[in-house]
Amino acid sequence: MSFTPIPLNLPEYPFKITLKDSRHFIFDEIRKKHLVLTPEEWVRQHFIQYLISEKKFPKSLIQIEAGLNLNQL
Image 1 (cartoon, one colour):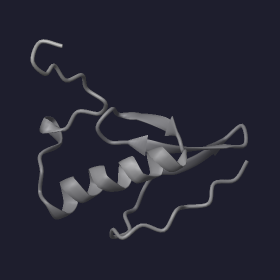
Image 2 (cartoon, rainbow, N blue to C red):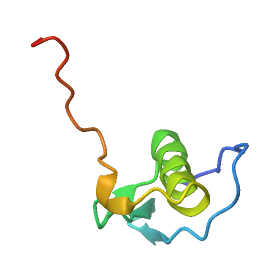
Image 3 (tube, rainbow, N blue to C red):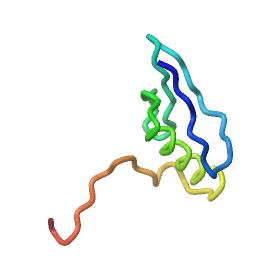
């Protein structure tokens, strides 16, 4: 299964992409692990790198898919 990158209106970044068992994996710098490269993950990793590289947002303040409580719901 090959992955075709979705063109995004963001700078290109040097992602660590590996191929294992005919699946592509991308290294997530926040979670410190390789994740299956899906279109959703491709976009997520671009925005993470954009925040870190372009906007100088600290990695320590970024959480991926964290829960959010709003009005005690």
